[in-house]
Length: 328
Image (cartoon, rainbow, N blue to C red; front, side):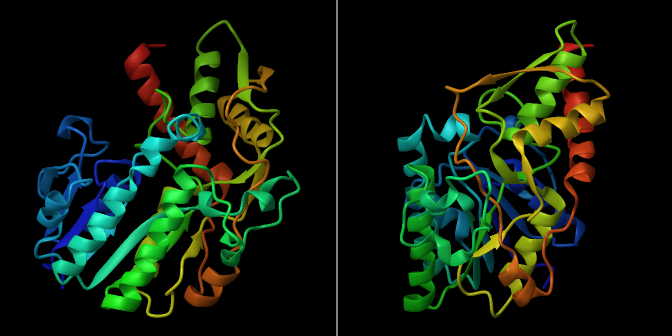
C-alpha cells in the first residue's frame, strides 16, 4: 500500500507540511501536495513528491488534485490566528468552496478515505464565556453558535462530510483541531497564533533593550495547545479508524491561561518582562479546552505532549528564524 496515491490539500501550510514529511518518513512513495501559495512560500519543500500550485476553490482544480487518489487529507483553508479570523470573516467563509469542491471531486474520483481538518471554533460560544472553562465535548457544537465566519464554515463543512459519507459512501473522518503549534509555522505577519506570537514577542524583547511585552486581552483567557507531533499521530489514527464516524476533538486537555503561556516562554528565555494588556485587540473566547473522553475511548490514546516540552522546541525554532532574519 506504500505506493497508493495520497493527496495533501493545503500541504504548503504548517500542518500540511509536517503531514507530508510524516508520510514520506513512513515510506509512502506516491504523494501529491497541493497549495495555492507559490512553491517558494511553502513552509516545507520536498522535491520527491508531486507539487501542484492550484486554487482549490475551483472545482476543476479539485478534480485534478483528486484524480487517481486513494486517500485525501483536506487541510486547505484561508485562516490564521484570532487577529486574522476576526477581521477576515468573508475570506474565512469562502473556504467553503474548497471544502465542498474537494468532497465532490474526491467522490467523483472514487477516493476511499477523506480526512477533513475542522476546528474547535465550531463550538457554541455560550459555552466559552468563562475563564473557568469546562472542557468542550463533541456534542457541545449544538445548538450551533460557532465562531463567526471561520467557525461557521467549519461547522457547515463537517455536515457536508457527514452527508457524503451517509449518502455516497465516501469514508469521511473529521477532527476538530485545538490550537496546533510547533516549528515550521507562521510566527509573524498577522496570521500567527498565540504560541508563536508570544515566542516572537519575548524574543524581540530579549534581544532589545525594551523588556516589555503587549498581551492581547487581559491575559486571563484559558486555552489548550497541541504540539504538532500529537496532531500528526491523531490525524493518522482517526483517518484509519473504523469507529470514529462523527467529528472528534483532537487537542491537548492541558489548560493554561495566556498569562501562564507567557510565564512559560519567559522561563524558557530566561527573562522577566513588563506586561501591558491591549483590551481592544482580538482575544477570542474567554475559555476553551478539549474534552478527550471520546478520543481516549475510541483510540485508546489522547494527545499528551506537555506544553512546556513543546514550547521549548517551538521557541528554539522561532529564535533561530528571528535571528536569521533580523540579527541579534
